Image 1 (spheres, rainbow, N blue to C red):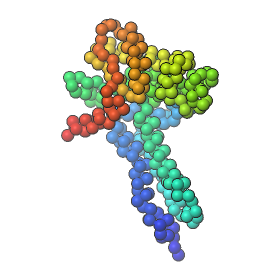
Image 2: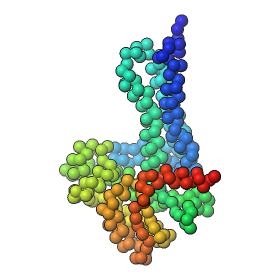
Image 3: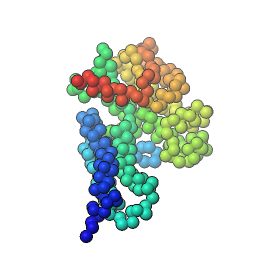
Image 4: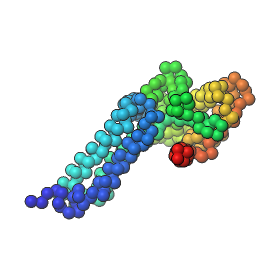
Length: 294
């Protein structure tokens, strides 16, 4: 009797390298979660509505360990079922590749949304990162900005992240599109909420769309309140803002500086500039932390 594990090229044994590779990719978010575990909130957003607003939360342990392991289990079941299929030779190779990589892709995408969507910040004091009295770092993104405001991915309401992250601009853009189907946002997105992101809102605002301008104006107002609070509390020499939103250049920074100054106690304050390292800042910062830990 020839079993499914003995049928040559189409068996799990023959494809063990492929199985190992795809399984490791499924577990990459778990490794990232373990590395970041002490800095992650106790409750984390794990589901979002079509408007970009988080509407489902799980514990930190469930998010970091449970979700990747669940996706891995589904992947292994699908891989085994595909390997036992007697008609597998008739399956289009491209379709088979998509089938084998869909779970690893979902795992990485879920990690990007859960661990990478938000607003982070650090304080450089005397040339060194300030980690606080408990050595836990600072969470600027989770300072309260609006009492009882938008629900944040950390589980609280009204955090700076819920108003100043790029995802907040996209969320408000989606809401505005649904309320104003005649807007340029709706036209550019084809009426699809999923197609609305921060860049689309900014681009439409630059072109003079009143709906997009109103959304962007509210975003600048929230961000200026956050910056003013930081200036009033810490009096830093520089606030450097990074991320994709900074691609708007002076369309963002000119009104942001003006409104921030208007909200500061002292009208002469440090610079407010775009970060020079852009989206590479996180990667470079991680490398520097590793270097300093040696």
